[in-house]
Length: 380
Ligand SMILES: *Cc1c(COP(=O)(O)O)cnc(C)c1O
Image 1 (spheres, rainbow, N blue to C red):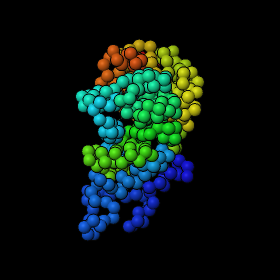
Image 2 (spheres, rainbow, N blue to C red):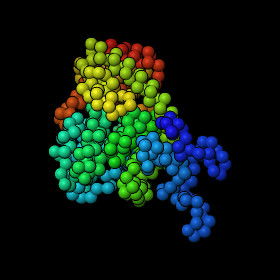
Image 3 (tube, protein in one colour):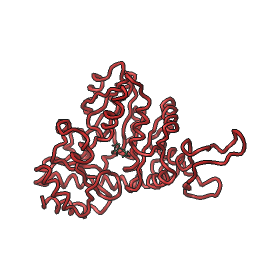
Image 4 (cartoon, rainbow, N blue to C red):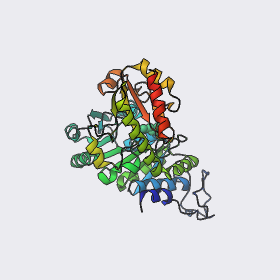
């Protein structure tokens, strides 16, 4: 079965009790059992819920994997993967990370005795140099946030295997429509389903997807034991979003490509980061490991915070907001928003300067989007 068909059908058979075509919202915390030890597979919603099960099965199928587990947020999903670690264990991560992931690593898990090494993910060899016998996990995002740099998933998967570490890939930016890390050798995929998978900026959620039975069982145990589960309505909203993931991603990409091409020609724009541009230093890798280039574009203007602020204040269609992946276009300012929790020196060292603007290009009419960007740039 192909991607768009799976998105609409897997885990979503007609409801066995009523025939409801759309998976119902099983808004219940508990389930009436027939006798001691005899029930229909559900006892308590933290442990399992049919609406959540439908979403989990569907997401696993989209990543060409065996198992999916849904969480209340992307960070809850990330935390469930880190729960596999013990004090003394080490994580090697690519430095250009989602700010909240960096904060979780540094402020929650480092004090618990887990160490983190950050390297330049563009060079696979750096993972090999940084990993030692204590390294249990390699953590990457690709494309990265907000610089849209790529990590070579197959190359890092080989290194992880050689070092006896698991490779986890945060696949939020590409979505499974454009990139399936498990088929490239990764052990675990993490999503913030808040973004492209949900797709409508109306629900927060996360997921862990794997074909590794041990990882699945450990993360499933943690899901029930720690309890960061999404509610049935949130699962239903996310599943409704998933149905249109393929057509939305195609339109996001089409619009992002046009936006990137316009920005690169603009005199007030210093540089543009988009893996679909032939100028992108890792364009060939993008073509190799992705089926498309996604809907995220970042760029640097000639100027700093004041000029960026005038740009944001003058936008009419793009909302000045955190987050990404919804049908509506958003613009954000990474130095103060998504990456505000990273110290300024560290941020600048990574290339996130005060002139950096990130766009989540939505699925509106492209001519309207380009006109909006041009008039806001004219105002700086
Ligand atoms: C948003 C995001 C997260 C965190 O997800 P939440 O749903 O906000 O908890 C993690 N990784 C990436 C790449 C993200 O964009």
